[in-house]
Image 1 (cartoon, one colour):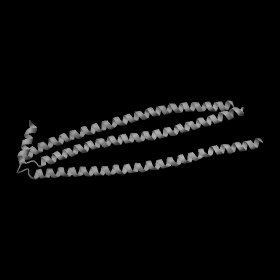
Image 2 (cartoon, one colour):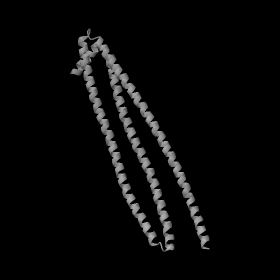
Image 3 (tube, one colour):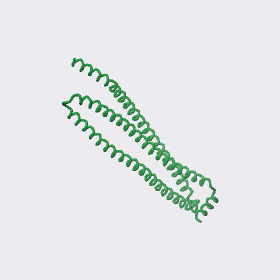
Image 4 (tube, helix red, strand yellow):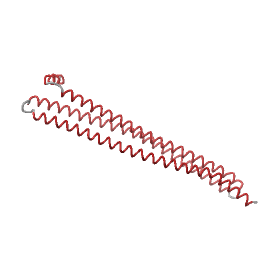
Length: 238
């Protein structure tokens, strides 16, 4: 009779564990799919970043080439327009100096803004880690308490049978909480990445706008006639 009861109990336990095992397998499958997707997205981002860097390098090379062409043209006209050349050189020097100052300021401002955002994100992570450490400590204390209760009832099978389901329920609750925290952590990482990417794009767009406006001013000045240039130079001196 006792043997049949134990066999029956074992079958019940197996039936109870079967959904749990199935769930764990499903969870592992989802985790692998997520990791593969994340890896694919990371590779895509890296490819896009590399493409963007190459485009920026090409744009910079084209810009430098235009500057060199302007310098050669000025040099070729130096003998005939010595006075005009000196004015252009002075104007060019001022523009380049202002451009360098603006670029340096923009670089520092952008670096500071990104650093502040990263610092804020690090502080959020530090706070979360501190809370996680406290939670783990509390959970370990609770787990030790369950062990103590079971040990105290090691000679009382009836009491053990009452405690073990409660312990399993507690363990399931902790597993569920852990899964929820993993989801929250994933969302936090995605949010941080999105914040950083959006801020970098915002700053990059500002830089491009500045470059575009500067190029446009350069083109407009290039279309000026000699009297117009002299008039503008006089206005800038006042």
